[in-house]
Image 1 (cartoon, rainbow, N blue to C red):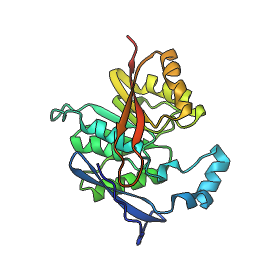
Image 2 (cartoon, rainbow, N blue to C red; image 1 turned 45 degrees about the vertical axis):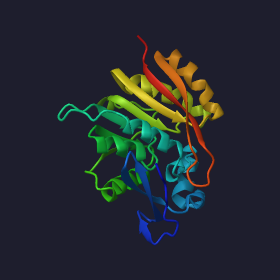
Image 3 (cartoon, one colour; image 1 turned 180 degrees about the horizontal axis):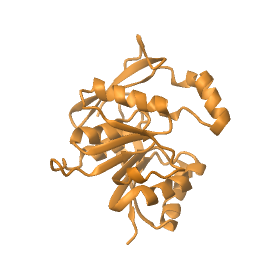
Image 4 (cartoon, helix red, strand yellow; image 1 turned 120 degrees about the vertical axis):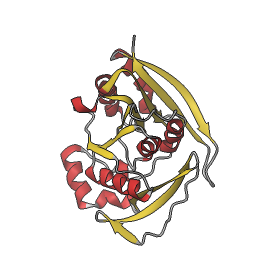
Length: 233
């Protein structure tokens, strides 16, 4: 997979100066569009207001490298039989690469995040990537959504804060369909060390395995871990 962002923003979308990142997964190019000045969003009045309400940070606006690893994992899935595609829910989607890969394979995908701007960018990226319109949903993993129980749940870098471990674990327990499976990728962050114990305490079965990919460009090798989650039997 390769990433070659256009670093000279020449357009605006949804009120943000943007860049487009062409990213190749399994031979297909996905054109992710996102805010060009991620670090400057801290001072954006919209972000300041939301932080005051809920300690919200605009993590969605940055392209997280671990999403590439999970996108590759999803790209290895078998294409679903027409008319019988499993449902897939991506949580904490950010720029939405993982969900778009599942969408391109033909799964019934809902891409979700805690920020409406993120969802607008995902829909625009689907359009630029030549994909059919994708379903998006505003999801707070502290809440429950009876209409979003999914056969498969995917998430990249949602375990970066200690306060997220328990709500994410409980969300998986309640939103993952019986017999379903979830995949979470984390770049070996210390807060995520507690995930396996917490998820098992909530009645989930977790397998953890390391994953590493060669460097992209001049960057370091990409090291992470994948948590595969099912309901305990």
